[in-house]
Image (cartoon, rainbow, N blue to C red; front, top):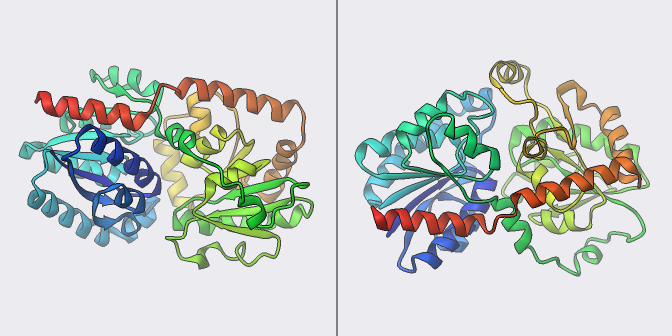
Length: 371
């Protein structure tokens, strides 16, 4: 069968890569093309467009890059028609992929959504739109099944691909020595995100934080596909170690982490690293966000738990003083750190339902063969 897969950012590429591998196992004759990144390409997908041409975040940034997004939408639609897939598989990236679904479904192209947009967090009415434009949805958070059921939709919960990636990880025994980490001092991982605007707003806070703790070893988890200058002044800081495209090895040795909201909060929890979640947006973006967000938490850790497990410091609350105070508690042995680690174990158990990518690939190929 012919599969056209669309992922528009780093996390989607990671999960897409695992899905491509699983699809090839279930369907050895599979021909796969689409939007993604290195992981999907290495897994065997013919890469039409790299996600770094699409990774825009925030209302203002999206508006500023509207022309680029419009051109990519046009190209994507034309490429799908030329490829003639048996199915289009959308991975997250809701703003773009929802528009593709509106294009494919009326043309009789089978349309699946793996990791659908977080409509339960904002614009819940869009669930009705998904019901009209998507043939099957494959969700990765346990509470999503009940949410969509309330809109008359039967969706498949396949497990969580982040847990798959963590389980598949094999630690590099030479990582610590290669980067010069001292085994006798705590390592604090800094995960500023993978989008340009995230870095611009949170890097200054992280830089000041490093100056507060000369007794800790800090390391920044960088993404090589981004311009290295975005990481300044952390990159040039004499007490910050540069770790590019190797976040899991860093988390494997970290004592604590400062993490920008996103998939990274869940990855950090699954590596059992105590963390604080930080997030800063532009003023207008934040006002719009307040008007539409319909959940109490922004981190996946707290959303899955249904309560606050990790501290979320947002906007002005993400001050150096507040982050520093939280970091002290995270590194120090005691009840605060222990309670977080206990909660992490519960989250792990909730998500551990087998391989999400294998479950999704099996269901997808079964549905396609039946149809």
